[in-house]
Amino acid sequence: MTEVTVDWSSALAAVWRRHRQGLRPIRRLDPIRWDQLRGVGRQQDALARNTERFIAGEPSNNVLLWGSRGTGKSSLIKALLNRYGDQGLRMIQVDKDDLVDLPEIVDDIAGQPYRFVIFCDDLSFEAGESSYKALKSVLEGSLELPPENVRVYATSNRRHLMPEFMADNLRSEVRDGELHPAEAIEEQVSLADRFGLQLSFYPFPQDTYLEAVDALFPGVRDREALHRHALRFATSRGVRSGRTAQQFYRQFSGDFE
Image (cartoon, rainbow, N blue to C red):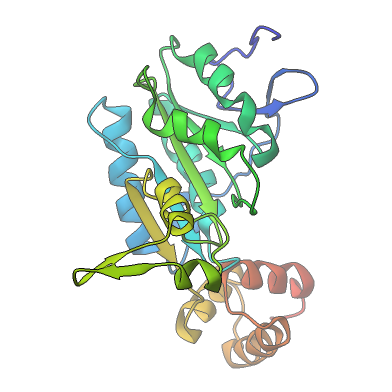
């Protein structure tokens, strides 16, 4: 194991590099700001409250943001770092394939005077994978409790992070009037249950999508034409979301007056 050399007094975030067996400071942070996000006010309020409690050393939860693609899950966590970095919040991104190293990563930052969020983006597991077991130990500990200055914030398209099969449901039983889920279902749910705060995300309604488009095109006078093209673009993509609005902006920025 290479000793961590990140200067956390100047670096707000780092990424774990498995082949180097070490952390690398992130040089170019996504500049997205808290007030730029649209359509996720409920999730923002809950995540901000949990994070502020964490920074203050009060009881707080690990967080799972789950739901439809492109609806702002990852952007919300990135904006969180930009909002609270000057209050001692730090972030470490760990890919799913590197979760086996998570206990060692956590050991190295446990004594730091900062509050660390382990960021696992687009997290999910397939049948037969076992790397989630290392994540379980960090979420709730085993014989040793997890460090007080570490929380895990994960995003996923799956509510339970693991695949769910019809055959698993068929193995469930009803005994004495009570439903007893099959062992496979218990295993699927047990990981997600370790995230005390779970926030759901859904495709944007049309008004929210157009609000996001308007925020990206503040100087456009012909809103009717802008909205007509934005809706056509969303239809071609098959989803209305913040990501779709960003993609529309990148393709048509400068085409509207």
